[in-house]
Length: 441
Image 1: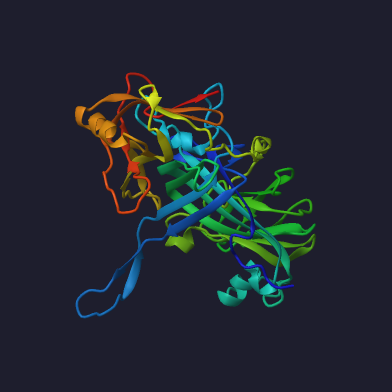
Image 2: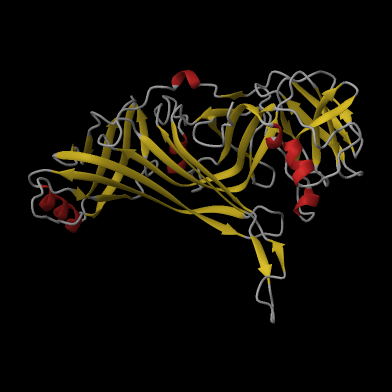
């Protein structure tokens, strides 16, 4: 059977969870998190961790003589079909786009997100295992009883995890010509992100150790469905072993380690093959270590997936401005939410301090009709303000106080049948509520 390389053909689920803050105000994944699926139809995603090394050269050198680690920069993005309305009847957020568009009374983001991308592969060849990479490519020493050159073919999970994800830009597209379904493109700036490869056990015991003899502390093991979990104690370079067998695995560290955490599968007598490694502080110049991925505990992965599967249609979506149609005909609309996220360096660790500042919401309906250009120019020139509302599947999306920032350029070309205007409406702060508001049907 040929290999199935990393691509958009892999079975992948992408999830988000609203975060809490720790005692220092830093966003963290909550205990027992409910990770909601963005959509059953994800058109694309991107994850770009940047270690942000700075080279030093100095006088007399044509190239860098060494490098030093700076604070990390993390960007993530996802484009997906909207399959549930943005809030429910109680006003609770049900789609990630709503958190990007709303602020608290203190002008903070309504919530940051934890991001989880789970890619499944039933079988990988032995040379693609983490065992092969760690011992053969990186030439680490294998413990007694482990053959560094003889891994077996296994199932694997590649997990992308981001925490402290700040929605920086979110665009809702209503375009019946391109798609009959509403789409969201969401871009995050994150405090930390990592990609882990968890090669999966097959009814085997789990053995863990650190590469630092002084490391102590807990490590949490959990099956991918969250039904089985066990906490082991780390005893430096000595192995500790699970009390039962696991048929799938994710790993979480409640605390940083100095050394790397090595996780093996084997029988009750000892380890046989490496499944994954969680890097400790020594791999990051002694600054801080990784923690793996959060446990589900009493939470769920996709707790409301029954609500998904049917896209919110862009057909029959009427749009009005001040109670009248936005245009005689509307070709498409984009609603773009931009949160300015300021990055500031700190001496606290690898994560930069992220803080939201200005919020801008701009709607760009593309319209055409018999008398669109004089109407839009007049709205712009007199500075008219009013409510801009879209009736979409499941409810209404509204900018309660909008003005025509740009009426669009009046351009005509030889032979064209229709002149379209890309008109821009910008949101101003209303007397009450958010710049962009959601009312379920």
